[in-house]
Image (cartoon, rainbow, N blue to C red; front, side, top):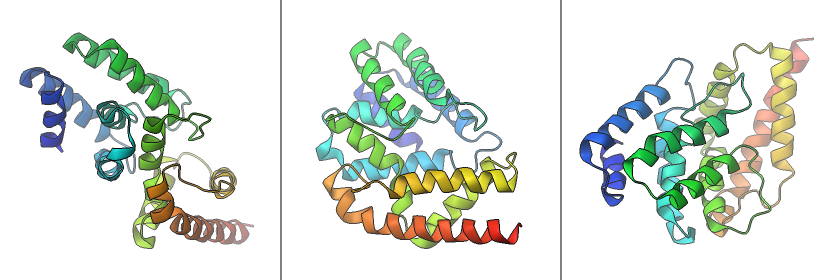
Length: 212
């Protein structure tokens, strides 16, 4: 992961010492307490998926930077994580002579991950949203581990309340057709998303029934 970050910062002509300082900040944030899912493993997965969608992106550098920073600030109790993450990226990168126009695009892409909806026709948005939710089309065991990790991050929420909230989120995702925005992800993943979400919904319904 570190080598990947340094390759990207080399392309941006960011000095090695400064790049390493930002790297350490990213590691500290993503490996913090309570990061059961929104951690460096998630970032690596999104970057791996984005690599496979690279030809779709109009500015792959912006997409990569946005993925690196999109969850750097993450507190499930708050609703401004994306805004704070975008601000963090701006504060860390602007002093390193990263072009302002690039930083504006990075911020816009981070904000796009808040609702995972788009009326945009911008390919960069399609790539980052599909990469961020690629986990939903993962093999069943990997998906189930993700679902458990999300529950751990929301451990402060009572079970009945969590089941209701999570059910609403999954049903909203199921209503999307197609689910993914890029053609490649639609072919790869739309069917698996439906299977995974329906399986989790059945488990949530079972848990809700057992709880009454």
